[in-house]
Image (cartoon, rainbow, N blue to C red; front, top):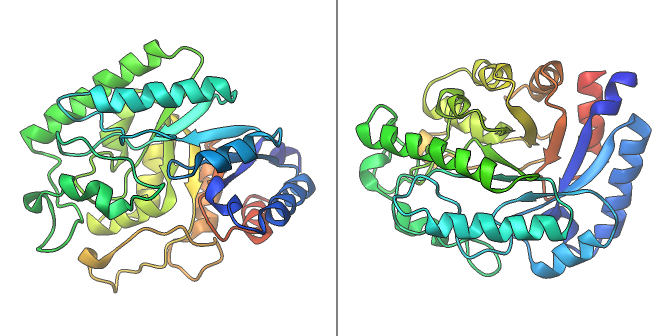
Length: 303
């Protein structure tokens, strides 16, 4: 049990938006107390101002999935960084207001078009429609990324992201902005450890995003996870299950966000053990139907 005390579990705020939110919250608090874990809530980038206000009044430590209550997605790879920095600044202001120390965001799309933030009435596909470039996708009608990582354009944009992260780290003292590995669609560029670790910025490792990326680009999921973890930069893990298997065509893959005991081929207990081994023990359960079973799953994996 002593080793468990460093583990922190956070629920996504989207799981606490329904009528049963108080019971679900108390169940999570009780389960964490029993296992010796600490508990928090991550405000999701698509969540409402009303839910943020409600959850911030509980006295529970919050983190943010940026951009929070902002107009634009954060694309540090665009030629013009103004929309992205506007959302970073807005999120930073809210972080200070609500005593939030950490925010995570997706920071890289292969486009110069401003990307409207999704949520609060706007869907994900609607937001990213203007970013879709057929020449960067694996096939007609698919948004799944092809392998464009050796292109001159990619290298230019990747360098740009690293430089702008330096500016964010120096421009917002006392606040920490983590970059998350992307789901491989709509020209996303932060896919594997070699795309992110050189920047020296704190990282959030997303399990189902990496599961999809590893299949799309014919890599081993656990090997790629260990590359991230060995960097020493992973400070947060978005943990959820994916139902997708290699029998499903690549162009039909989507994200996970399912309970950890969902039937899958990911071997999540091994991933959790690997994260624990490398001291990446801040697990955000990005699962709308989260329950204490997910917390028990983590505890069993690391016991």
